[in-house]
Length: 88
Image 1 (spheres, one colour):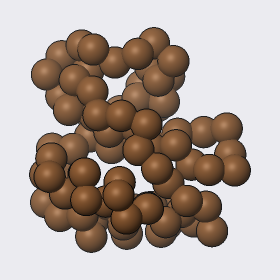
Image 2 (spheres, rainbow, N blue to C red; image 1 turned 180 degrees about the vertical axis):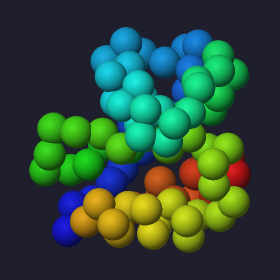
Image 3 (cartoon, one colour; image 1 turned 90 degrees about the vertical axis):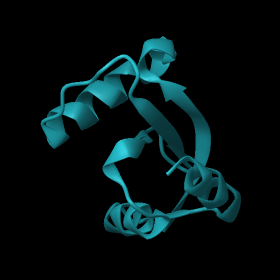
Image 4 (cartoon, rainbow, N blue to C red; image 1 turned 45 degrees about the vertical axis):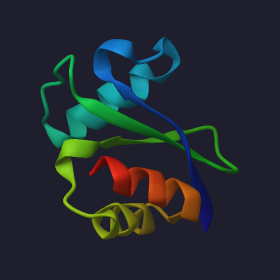
């Protein structure tokens, strides 16, 4: 199992270019139109070269995030979970 840690939380309009392809991919999967004010969390999946994208308005609780990551064979670290909880 991989560990997911927070790289950052950004408004889409402020998103660093290096994360753009991950956000676009996740938006396509979710059939979502991205808006400039969407709050997006970028998680680094340790031991891989990928990132996991969370559109924060899509979640009601951190347990939903934990379940999504579990399906991706990842576990979120405690500090990241606390930070995300404060943004939900």
